[in-house]
Image (cartoon, rainbow, N blue to C red; front, side, top):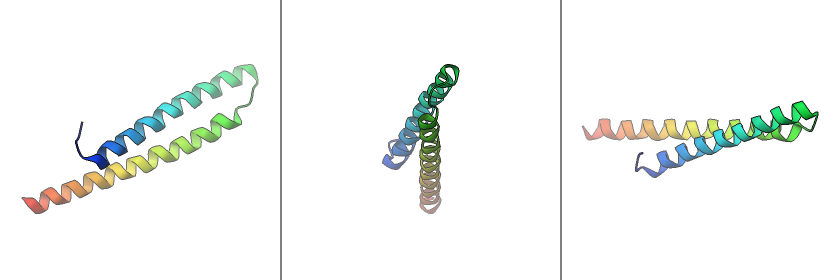
Length: 74
């Protein structure tokens, strides 16, 4: 994995968001079979989506910045 802190943080944000998304998706599936409350996990999935999107954007910007630095150096 990269040793650049911004890229590491972005990857961790994506992984964390995806793990939470999977957990909440499982909760929705479980509650739908029991007839339970699905609102909370659905709302959480929406915030997980935003976390993954923000982390992906941070990864893209970090990658673009690194590419620009390498272009300038060469």
